[in-house]
Image (tube, rainbow, N blue to C red):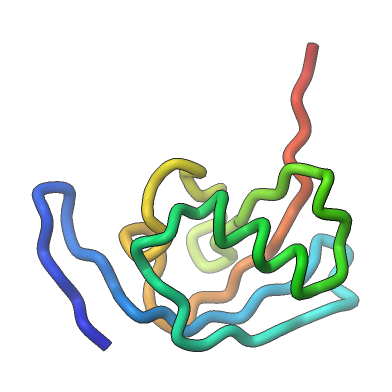
Length: 94
């Protein structure tokens, strides 16, 4: 694994993490994920791997920090290797 320093902080690449769907019934482990990919891009790939509908926008939540990840930022700048994530459908009001 490489951790690089950028003006915004560090970025882990490649990433290894586990993802559970929002119901808690499915869990998958992911390895060698490009840490430069945006959280939105990774969330869609995770949803596809879990056979979730890909016509729904998905987000990732970091369980250890109890926070939603920024969709537009690289995943490797937001989570640590070995993170426990949850994939959740993104809902929009209005």
